[in-house]
Image (tube, rainbow, N blue to C red; front, side, top):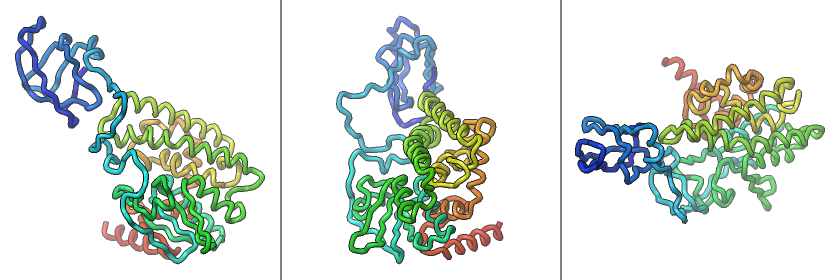
Length: 357
């Protein structure tokens, strides 16, 4: 096998002339993946070139010469660059890290979120409710920059001790405001608050089945496959293949369910669709994790999921909801939302950009 020069960990290799395998004595620095270690024995070395940063070993003994990560008896967090884009905000502790209160707008519903798939679930539902004529569902949506650690401010932690978006405050009853966190809980709360909107009584149990399926399955798509395929500093075969297999299986579950149904539970659009689409719909449409949809061959393997994803993507409420609390990309941005007229500003900005191009 080869150790490629592409990571931060540096070791020094010294080949002794006294080895029973003739080698050129040389001392140099070379870089190896941080997840493996060079063993003390060098009997498997077949060639070491001073002009190259590659150490070549016989394939038969490579596995034994390089040991896998051996966990210590007690894990201790070593703060620093853990090799992924979220290393700066990951930590093994909970609680507020700074005093910072959250803003409050004019509406009873105050959402603090970001346009990740979990955040999109809530803004899509709220926009769908408004489109359905539920005026009391109007809301203020404040962006939370998780890369800056804003979810660890005291005001945010008071609402959500887990420091994750999305988080909702309902001030409908000012003397007794209600905090709601976890995206699935927020969807259920809002549906029940507004007389079962997008949660038909006759299909409630089936909707709940798929809502909880999404909550349990998506971590494998995001924290599993997405992390190792798109965000980890090094692409490693084992985790990518392990999670690729699971995501293919999950997509097949959806494909089978949608084979004879317009929406997840039949002919009605529900919070099951609203929960699943931001993750799996965005994924099959190529909006998550770079070329991952091509990698998993979704176009050929999951036609029913694609049909469903494309159909939902065309809904006006989805088009609006998916860009709320979004501050990146070229397909619409609305970092903070306080009124329906805010979307007009997005359209004007997009038209101006198109004109320049």
